[in-house]
Image (cartoon, rainbow, N blue to C red):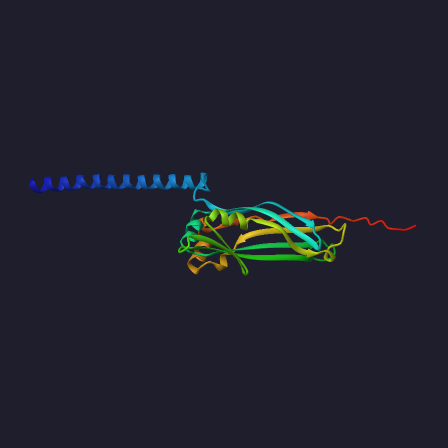
Length: 218
């Protein structure tokens, strides 16, 4: 009888253990579904970055055509933390001007590329924005990004390169250069959306004004 009673108790414990394990699995599945729902409903919850042109224009200057533009630059929380810890970030501004040709591919008329380097100096507690041999220091990251996001009267084409009255296609883009990131961050930038900065290209049509020159004498 003693042996029989022990076996019965052991058999009764097994269903209870199985029931507990099943409950744990159900809770895990429920939590996983909740997390998936958050990711689907709130895709921007991790504050991924973006760079979006707000305005861009070409105009005639004294010696040629100049570009003016304004961008909205948001790095996202992960890249902001990375640069504040000393990881340098590189950006590329690309401008391209083409003319449509019905018989061949578009003709490249003019272009401009500018590279930026953004880094934080822990000793001076300042952010440095570099463009070639030019350097500017800023007390905050926001100030550095606002300067990089603004292009004012940048020469992009000589006057003789464009024909008045012709239609040209302009394209402008400011983007994070992921190839310049340290190797571990390059892998994260490919696989992890939190490390990506979505860059939008601004496209518009530009027609140089035709200037009527009247002359003559008596």
